[in-house]
Image (cartoon, rainbow, N blue to C red; front, side):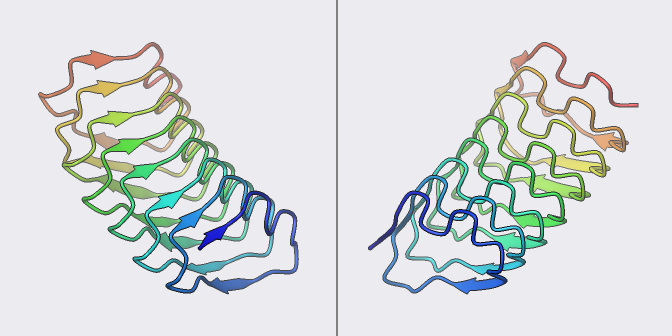
Length: 173
């Protein structure tokens, strides 16, 4: 079973959703602009969450990504301004571009050792992000990945990094 594109788009009164275990895929834009959505329970049956699925869910505070998911797709949590906590499972190998763009309340995140690539501008303008732990064997940090993360005061770049993109830490005071 699939939750289709734009299925709950703009449902501004939706506060909580529990996705049934029969669902295996959440399509792109499925919950975009659900501005009151603060809690989402995703079962381990879900293997794919599409691009922009939680775009502008400005009340969403935390989310546990099930271990069945292997990619955090492009702009998945873009502009989720209340998001403070995300658990990234060790099944994830890629974080797409703009995945956490403007998640201004996100304070700390751990990237597991399974992640090989972090996309362009993934954490751009995460102004509260103070600690980034890269446990991964990441090989590439793309352009502007941590741009304007003005609170970032602790990051260890693993020796596996072969390429550090343009402006990766621009504006990090």
